[in-house]
Image (tube, rainbow, N blue to C red):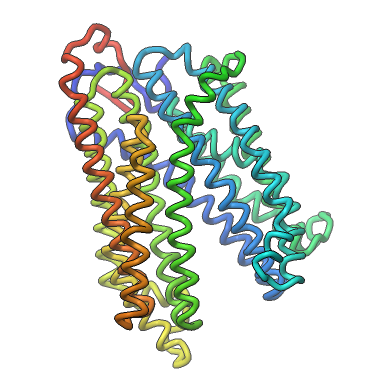
Length: 478
């Protein structure tokens, strides 16, 4: 049966334009799903803000801890996507249910350390010298959120990897958009006691997030298990321990890579904080803008993971190479267009966050506009590195990229930023140029790695391998 976005076509070399169209078709719903997840965070922040700064600080910090923990563990589950893509490319769809059930068991096991870590949020914060009241409130908030860790790893981690690989990315899109509305309704109701719901104050936001992620996970699983077109992908079978070891072996370096990158941005934010509130505010504005734009190449990287993995599994290394470089070009192209917007209209963008005519905001506005100019370059290499990383995951290459990321971010990026900021007096701009240098080095290393690895595989399998004419590509049409 042909699945949505997986129409029957020959696996002989598709054109570059076909690669581009298919990658864009697969990436679009993923990008919107990513933006929907960001919208949930914005909703939580806005509604918590109505309770005052103490609730906002506790809820915001608690939510950040939750999402950092689950995001790192979700990195392990990216292995599910490439494994399913390889199996489908190799015309071994009977392996897909084994990958699904093994990935589901892995998700549940990964939830155990996440639950434990969130349970100890209060003593951890006290050990870092945080105020006792803040640590207590954050501990309560995380105690509520910890119950959502299994659902988050299943609904966001596993399903975001599995659904695109079987051609069902649009289902993830619609459920994610619906989740934004459900989260907003529950947040307001549980915080303020509206709609007949109990009034829980700032803990209501944590309860709303927990309920929303569980509903998301259950709806996505229902779509897989109850819809006839997907049911054969999830036929009941036992998880396989050797396969779990393979999935974990592919995925744990991705989680480390996510951690290396996120700690660089965290450290940069802490360094900017030493420079004063005005510079920190400008940093947060520019980073928020860059984060929104980043969702598109992030989705393209996820699509590249699937498409490179499929063609590699199909025994078509040249098609895998073309799929990867077309995806990199799409990511860079989008970020270049986004960068033009940042250069042309920086004050208009900053005006979405601050009143431009308020004299008290003048220095923050000026610095934020300047940082957006750096972000215009920053974004291009950021898009290149995330898509390049996705291409390498499609080849099941994750350990060397992990080392490259650690070297680029902490061997080049952070020292450069620190030196420019504190020894050359560039302040926040210097730290941002350090981020750009780190991302540029990682982008170069990832792209060169993919070039060499994919080129090395091209002559290994002759063109016209038996069975090649029966393969089906994600999003391909004749």
